Image 1: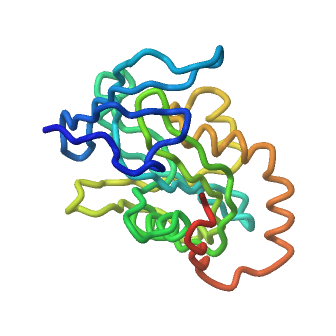
Image 2: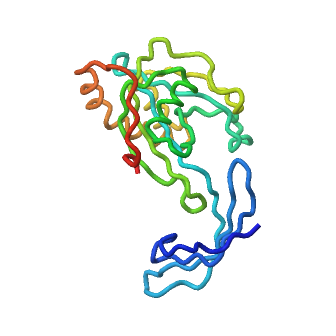
Image 3: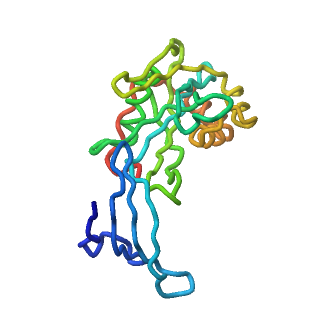
Length: 226
């Protein structure tokens, strides 16, 4: 199955020319093969090159934190990419989900916190937005810290119709940071979130403890998370 090059002049940046695009596989992810030219640092355009690209929607992820108890809520779940890992294929991660059309990253973070951890997000603080693996994928990650009450957090969650099974893990904030520093969690998203959290935790905790949380965090206006 082949698709013609983009017809619109603004379909690609001025420093990029898409010569051909072919969809090689369409499933949970889509694999496309692009023939393109890009502008060179030395000037002019490159000769035509071929690159494969994994295409899937952007993702929202949230590290759940209870400032009152100074603990974080994470989840364990099966990850096919770790199927051959001698330590097992169930990784310690943070709540995350795909952003569907018409959704904001903030709304997805709140929804996934309920579905995967049974937690209500009371306040959201953006951490960062970044490409997950730009050498091979167009996917961007929108990362948050979410304020919660972890009093009753626990159990097994997830949507059965999506093949999800997530087990809630409650950790003292210091223990979670130590796990990240010592290689106890080796998935990129929780590592980035926890390393940021390690530096920002005192200030965030003081700010959140200084005011009560009124209720579930409101969705961020469209476009606010880039």
